[in-house]
Length: 335
Ligand code: BTN
Image 1: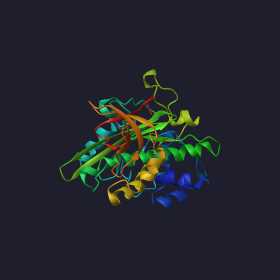
Image 2: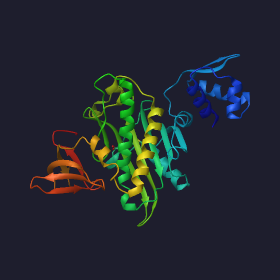
Image 3: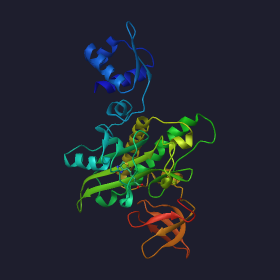
Image 4: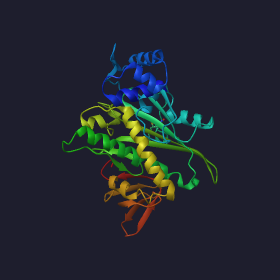
C-alpha cells in the first residue's frame, strides 16, 4: 500500500525526502507518489512539498486508517490484514462476517465509530467518533476449544501493557506515572475506573475452533463522560494529554503477538501469570463472587494456570472462579 509506505518513509526520515528517492524506494512513478501525498493531505496530514527538496511530514492527524496503522505495525501476523471503517455497526460483527468469508488469522477490524457497539452481558458499548479505539481481532488458533477463553486474558494483558507503555512515555519521567491495571478477568482499570473492556466471541465445534473474535474498546482521548458512565475514565484524563490511537492499536497488536506465542506453547497462562498478576488490581483484596444463588465474599489471591481467579474463602478453602460463570466485584465499589 503506497500511502502506508510513504508514511513510513516520511516518519522514519524526520526531514525532507526527495520525490525521486520515494519513487525508487517504493518502485512507483513520481505521479503515483504525488497522488498518494495529495490523498494523505486530504486526510489531514500536514506535508510540506518543496521543489528540489521533496516532501516533509510536519504533523499527523489522530486517525484510525489502514495506512496509519500499517505504517506503525512491527508484527508478523497480528493486524497485517487490516480493515478500517469510518462507521460500522460493530467491529465484532464485521470481524465475524470477514471470518465467515475466509479472512486470515490475525485480521484486524477497526472503526472510528460504531452504531451498535456491544459490551458484555448484552449491554451496549457507547461508541462516539474520534476519541476511542474500537477494534476486533480475528484469530484462528490451533488450540483446544476449552482453552480459547484464556485468549481474552492474554489480550487484556496485551492492552494493559500497551497502554502502560504509552502512559509512561507521555509522563516523560515525571512522577507519578499513571498505570492501568486489570480487574479480573479483563477490564482495564485506571485510577479505580474502567478504561477499556473486552468482548470475546467464538465459533467452535466440540474439538475444533473455527474462529475467535476478540473485541476491544479503549477510552483513549475522551475528555468527559456522560453521567451514566461515571465509572469510566480515559488515558487522556489520566495523563492530561491526548494519544495517537493508531500508535496504541499497533502497540496492542505487538504485545498480543508476543504474549500469544507464549500462550500457544503451553495452551495455558503458565508463562504469563507473573505479568498478569503484577497488574491484577483485585489481588489481595476482598471480592464478591456473584454466583447465581450463591453470592459470597473472599480474598482474591491471583490466577490459576487456566486463568481462573483464586479466591480464599472465609473457611480457609481456596476456590477457583471460572470467568464464564460468574462475575466478581470489589466489596467497596467497582474494583
Ligand atoms: C465490556 O463490556 O467490557 C466489553 C466491551 C467491548 C467493546 C468493544 S468495542 C469494539 C468491539 N465491538 C463491539 O461491538 N464491542 C467490542
